[in-house]
Length: 375
Image (tube, rainbow, N blue to C red; front, side):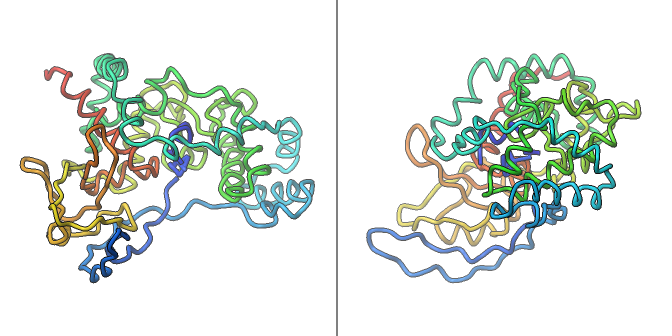
């Protein structure tokens, strides 16, 4: 991830972004607790929890010497040069020469400060991606690349429609991959956005490492989202370096337009973050009339269905089940909607941390699959 264009929608990696192309280790979940109501209710007692889904280590972030806004920028840039040299063995003069050509863009700061999930309820967010044009576009894209997609699906266990849906949500099937120069985006956010400077300065350093490894990439011509994500699947530089795959064995990993690499890399991102072959993703849930509102502290599906049912939330008849879940409460067209997110739903949120993003990917994937004839 993901996260990348997902910052248009979130808050990317996913991340975040993100944000957010932006894997992090799962944090230990807290006990389920009832949210305050007009008549306060006692905190729900602790419940048995399942183990969290193992995640890759946190991606490196830049040190305070690079990101502390109280330090003059010239000093921070020199600290960044030294950090990138030590961490990734990049020539210091090459870094200085590149940063001398980087441009601060205020519109990038403006864009990242207003993520879509912060202002749109589910009923409005959903229709951005669940509409006839996006669904038909996904079916056409699937048909065009069917052999390659299904080969990756067979190898990895990630269904082809989810790979297509990620590309559909991120870039409208490769039509909108971003027109910000990645160097400018990451430079702006690393040195002009203190709130997340450690992450973005870390990604800027990863960009220099990526350019050094993938010789086909031109640092000054590389465009992407305002958050620095690139290509059809909107990978951040660290995601590109860590989890991109050479899908056709040509000796390079090209995630900009080369679909064999794009498909293999998105699937690999899911696998690395815990995708379970054949596993359930999400289920529509019912709520008992006397159930208290529940706000769970994690999207990690660590809560047994029996425990959630005891608090009044259970899968609707005919919906899939799994060992553990998390609970989503969303504002739908007809009022509150309740969803149980399972392991594979959690994996989608590693691409972008927004549950609305993940549910959009799932529903778009299902709509694409429903209109795709079997062979």
